[in-house]
Structures are given as structure tokens and as C-alpha cells.
Image 1 (cartoon, rainbow, N blue to C red):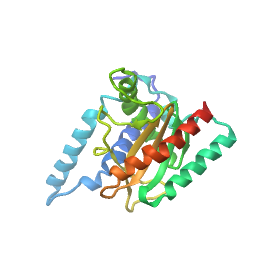
Image 2 (tube, rainbow, N blue to C red):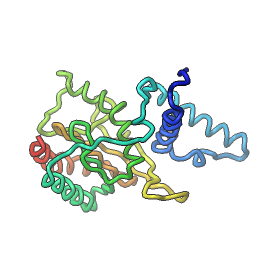
Image 3 (cartoon, helix red, strand yellow):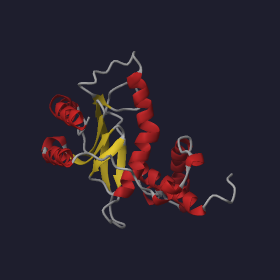
Image 4 (tube, one colour):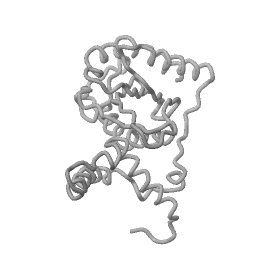
Length: 233
């Protein structure tokens, strides 16, 4: 319960963001209205909503809701022009490697967005997931001396100590002004080296995040990310 002096526009956006989080990870409500009757369809949707929001409600911070939630904006990390263009060229190169199947990227430094090829609304929701759910667990593990990570090599960011992409989240994007129609489906892989985290949205096909992808990122792409990180630092 909150008193009346909290502006309703803030809470309207909090509710909207709760829906956008569901749509990002679970697809639209309509997608889950499946079954032979209206009752079955409704029950299937209700079950999916219960499973998602029982977890989601534990991580949102309503006590910190403010005007930034209403305008849903992000603070970008400022870097020198030459470094920024180098990052853009690097991501263009990355998305052109056909066997990696990387379609979109987000480049973060110290958990702040430097560059993104994702529409702002989806970016806001993805950033919320990373900063409030994923990164706190990961950096706590990384800073634990018993969790051995070579910072000069880097690793994939996961929700547990197993550096496996088998359970990399599937996300659904409806951006770029698309209304109705089919969504774009991706698998999200996040690679961290030093102070840089690179979010890669990979084509959702079988074996997309297999050993070939992991080895290519670690052996070839990782060192390039490390060089950019040192340049920013």
C-alpha cells in the first residue's frame, strides 16, 4: 500500500514495465491463450502469469519507484568519439560473422550502457533484468575468491557458477515500431571481461550457443573486447 501523494503516472509505468518484462521473456498474453475452450485458455494463461510474477515481484523495488520509472530512460556511459566508433565498428564486424548468428548487441562498461542496437523500450527492460537480477549475483560470485575467473580471459555471465549457455534466456522483441505481427526470438548470451559486458542476441536456432560459439567468443572476440576495455579505462 502506498499513500495518495505518490503520482499515479509512476505506478502506471511500473505496471507497464511488469507487462513488458513478461512479454520479453514469455511472449504476449495471446501466445499463451491455447486450448479447446475459453476456460482452458484462461487457465493456461493464468498459470504462466503465476509462475512468472511470483518470481518477478520478488526483485522489483517499488519503494524506489520515481520519475525515472515514469519516463523509462537510461543514462548512457560517455566515451571518447574515437572509442565509440571503434565499438560500433567492432559490433558491426561481430554481427557480420555468419556462423556466430549474432543479430543485435548491447555494449556496457561498468554496467552502464555505451552502445545498443536494440530499441530503447526493450533496452530499458533488458537493462533492468541485468542490473537488478543477473549482475548482482554474478559479481558476487566473481568477487568470491573461491570462484576462479581469469579477468584477462573473461567468462559468460550466468545465474549460477556453471558457465553454461544451455539455459541462456530466450527473449522476444517486438521493437522497431512493429505492431501486431510476429515477434523476433533470440537467445541472450552475455560475455564479461574486466569492466566490459557484451550482450549478444543470437538467432534462436539449434546449436546456436554450442561449443563453436563459445570457443569463438573466448579465443577470438574476447581479446578484442579486452583491448577496447583498456582503451576506455
